[in-house]
Image 1 (cartoon, rainbow, N blue to C red):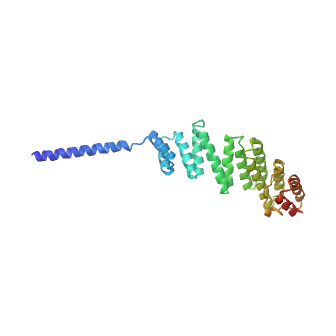
Image 2: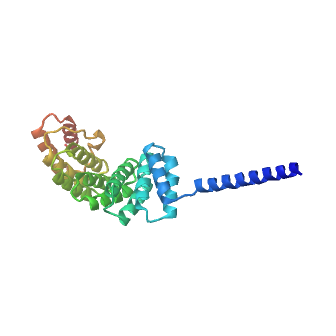
Length: 260
């Protein structure tokens, strides 16, 4: 009798322990936006981006108004080099809470990085969209105009590129981007020459001479004979002026010789 009773008590105890364990496990796996957000942020700071992203996405599933989760996701995707998703998430955060902590900064960084990557991979339409959006946030930032000018150059829209270069120089009051603007401007003119767009090339090279006549830059030898005779005198005048101001520009001298 006592044996049966003892076995019964043992079974009851086991069932009670199992029930308690299951209850504790249930509490442990209970998810809330707050706990998930903290976990996601910790994982991001630890540079465990692949682990952080599901946590942050789950936050949004539970509460789509949690704009900090979108910011954190944008940061994770930037760190992983996925700028398309970075821009998408940062944009949602900006639309929800433009004055929120780190929102504008994250959105701006995502647009600049995304535009730069799009230029590198020759996705000029995407680059133009990212840099244009960046300028809507920072209308006086020369970085945006440099990116827009390079995107227009990639699309062969040289008149638009020239306008963007000019505005970039105007807004680069500190001179921090001067070298980058000058090189990109000359690259644009050289590309126009190479594509037979001599009129556009003349305008771009004249602007280059106007902005920095004394600094040598490399002009592609393949561009030397790209200009038709009707435009050659104008281009020769621009290059002649550059040589007059700085005789050491051998590339400009070679290009001028090719037009004669």
